Length: 462
Image 1 (cartoon, one colour):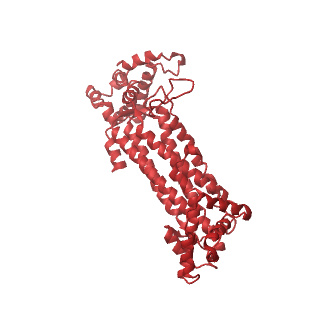
Image 2: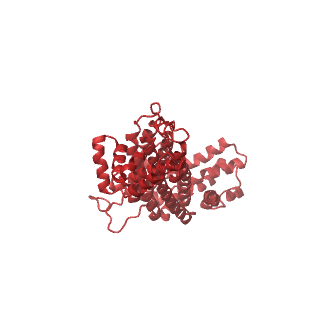
Image 3: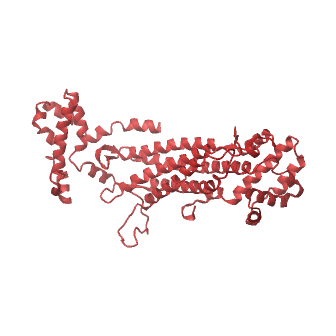
């Protein structure tokens, strides 16, 4: 967790001042509950709030740290410093509780707070993706599978796909937030031997949590594993979008690119460079978030009622994963919001190879005319390979690749297009009539491939 990739609101959740504030509230609410039950005097509970409810300033935090250096125990250091403010009532603090009651309940609150920020981040990203999806809804571009031209799609469908992906992530994150929102105030080994379960119920209600059904001495770590696994999935979705942008920004593609601000520099050596640095950065940040997933899974297995092998892990991955993902989601929303798209380049690429993207359309037309799928495939593939060869892409002659200007000239020709070659195919001429050929290509290629865009958008956006 470094300032370069941190935002203040999320960082504040993991700051000592917020942590100690939550610890105090857990202890003070527990005292209120015990006072109601007659375990401690009511005026003692009131005094704890009155004298102990003070901001955790740098001076107070330094004092806690000073005590911990001697006691080697963070919760004892905290309660000792608290006792310096509340005097004799301090004997009622931490009655029947164990350290994990405070630590685990606090961690649950912090993870909830972090989830709330992340949910807001996802909402901002969804808003940007939806806006760009509708802006580019019918903006045609070539779809690619294995990085190779496949069939036409639209830029809007790309944005809609990412929208749907993050909408799923939002549902997962809400579930993970609910899963982690548990409270353990059950005492040593979780038997409630020294504290009434009603204290746990009271504290849980005050903090917006639910009581953990069986806490042993710690909240079970499968909940935490679920939470960090969801963060890892969201991070992978961030990388999914970032990778698409990086490919589209390649010089030879240039169908989209990150916004390049006035005065921005792309390279210390090469003044002409415009690099997809934000998307590359997002790819790296996703790796950091995902790196928390395996340790979180390994934390599930603890010895007997508890050990602290999970503790050091969570002190690091809690802040690092949430702070990093918060930054990444905010950055991605900005990238999407300002992303520059180049529809003319998209059309140029779509039309660059003689209409071979209509190959499946022809294949299906032939099967509807009674041709077996195998025979139809051979006919269409034969002609599609001829199109490739006219562009110098000949597996039998790898040295025949034409120059770039030759490719541009070839793209402008008509006698090397799939439709033309099919019309000259002798075998196909015995199968299809002139009217059949006219019907095959009577609908514009782009209109054919984008006819169901509205259906897709209705599924995604309602």
